[in-house]
Length: 433
Image (cartoon, rainbow, N blue to C red; front, side, top):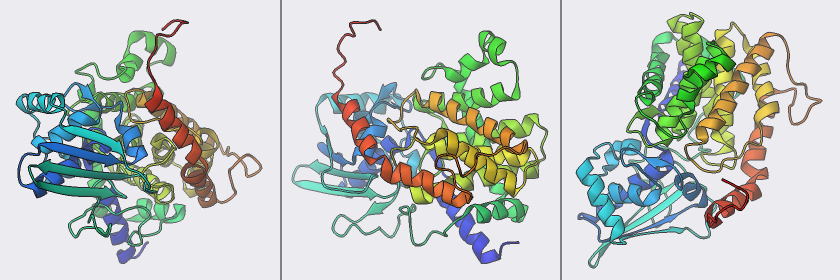
């Protein structure tokens, strides 16, 4: 049994990293920063300047903003100034109304918003918003975490900030053994709150079926033609429920999800596959709670060395978590779970992040499919060996090999992806669609 002080530190870390969010967390981060600057200004801004890191811009360019039917940063910034409340954190726009939307559209049409790349910064998650009215102006800065406000002068964290940068000296240093031992031995009442992830994220999957969001991947997998291909199987249900929630979130539905490490998609991917498998495999409530804890905490652990934003798609991280959770629900022990992690790393490493957008559901489907496959191989005693690629005998070293590639090795890839995304002129393709 892990000692109480260590358990309390881990629980505090989970509460810090697993939080509700409405919409993609990058535009919501910028909206939150705008709301804070507006509150400091004390009146409605006449002009807003947003200076953002490249990764923030990349993740906010093509994603739907909840309740607006629009994509991108301008409407998120406008609504952040008009109706946003910083106390709502990543649910900053939950008071949105049709009237506010129309006002936001006028705000954009009047060319009151400027968005530009922040130069000469190394932090991948950075938003600096300045609101101006007459001779007054106010600036708010978020850096290192989606809700981590810092003071403009020193870049120091403000006293009321709730999310620490990663890696952070105050965070407990995790490893795979500690993650597993906590998830499987912590008193149930101490981790029962993890059921909230199921409540939020499975509800998002159900609500998604009421509309046509994104590419309708989840609904497509549920249709008769797909059932003729996939069958009416646990595998099919896992993919559809996970993809549906992502469809809705990326498509701009006003549906809250429980995020993980600053990403709603990661929260969905760490939750829904585990919940669907547990229901159809008739696992107990305790087994589900422990599997969800294992899944989410594994993702948090990987993110400690990867960073909040990187060139590596977040579904890689969250799918590793869900594979661990599913392996546990299959009856796997620590060794089985380590095998699942290694199988995942051997397969998905290198999947790029090219921004938040409706097609993220396709990547999540790839990740979740691999999660199930890796768990099955593990339970059969099959594991990619250290003689193959970047996998090491040590599971923790394998994870650090993955994160080194994502955080350091793919830096040039990240720059190339952003360059491609920002330079597309959308000419008519001479060879078809």
